[in-house]
Length: 231
Image (tube, rainbow, N blue to C red; front, side):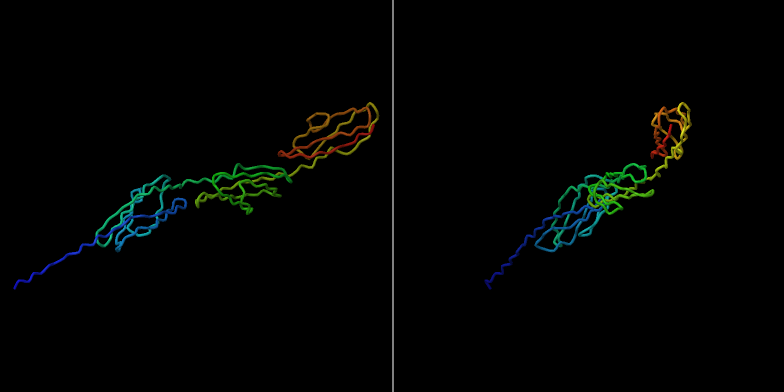
């Protein structure tokens, strides 16, 4: 009849761009899919760079060791269009808090404690400086928590407080000129006299009335006492 039918096929080209970002807290990384397409994205395939994969859109992954991982995301639309992208992610799983060596002080003394190992510090005293000054009355354990990009670790330091010995140089005495007298100290485990002698007892023969001093020491702590000898 002279009529013709014309069939026209319209082909639509779809596009997809794979993209993502990451947020790292210690060894845990949260991935956010930012892929865009003018059609529906139906599949995500993540390769975390450590031999593990995921098909979630926004997965979270924990790494067992520190390092730099090349993370590969492949996205596919419902129409079969595919794109992929790779981003390097740095992971640090190693953090060691160090509150410093244990300390021994004498009662009434101060000690400075210095921590290492992180970028931020929180002591059991609630102080947030790297170093703190402490003056405990008794043996005390201090704890510091260090933080580095959300990765935390804790360590303890013990401050031992030794008592101050009570030095006693003995009672005052009176002697006749030319006589000798023995002075005996107590209160410590070692002694130093003003005569430079280091025995607990000393034999003296003063020419005039004299005051003698003794320093008694115990566990690294000292105190002083004096005794007058009247001639």
